[in-house]
Image (cartoon, rainbow, N blue to C red; front, side):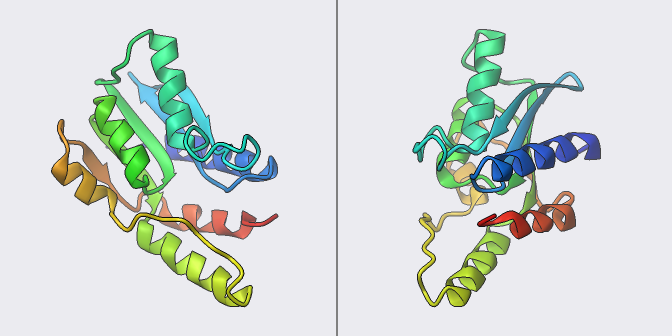
Length: 162
């Protein structure tokens, strides 16, 4: 069901986010086979830890475009497994499907590597709840497709701090 062309657009958004000085995360929302919203990470550049997540950016844009609060017929493609906040927003927007490249475990491994290389100076804020657990406790249920184009997603780590 997932299509590479849509994940590639999410990866392009992640690259743009990194070039703008933010983390390399991106998201797109697809409706009827067309991208209706692209989300960029703006956490650092906008000093906004909430709206600065790529998934939140994409959801807000899609809802504004469609002039409605729900995205029932859409698919979210994102470069990383959604954090608890983003996964909750996806559920509240009634999105039925999320496709992501890298997993939470991939991100934890990378953050541990960076922390080790920086002598412990690198810090990462997290809530240790995987997206699947949020889905399990939420309603409506969301289909989560993990690790789609993971190898391409892992390459985004090379952009961290650049």
